[in-house]
Length: 122
Image 1 (cartoon, helix red, strand yellow):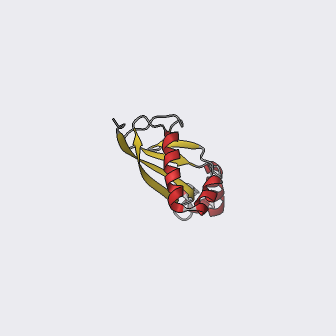
Image 2: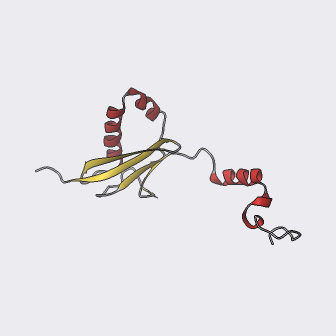
Image 3: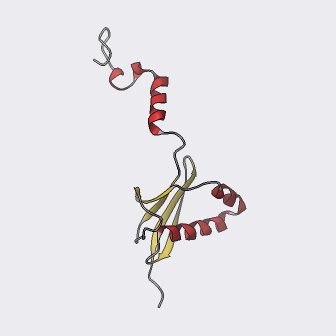
């Protein structure tokens, strides 16, 4: 008798604003690593050799299911959306500080709307 199969979705991004999404039929009891191996193998077959080069340079740091980080050995269930996260190139706190410095403090947040002649922040 064949193992029961169910559908999961595998999502990853090779670059900013380019998301790949693939639906897969996997066996019951599959892990995140097994789904990744199956999904990327199917995707590489459909894309050709150029995709293999771009994928080999990318290292996925952490998998997640519906936005929650999980281990590579975590079991998947029917309807799960498995997401592969890339490492951040810039710390979000540093990026926000740089944006704030570029924009200037007079046009953002509490300082955006103020009455003429009043102190900053009021």
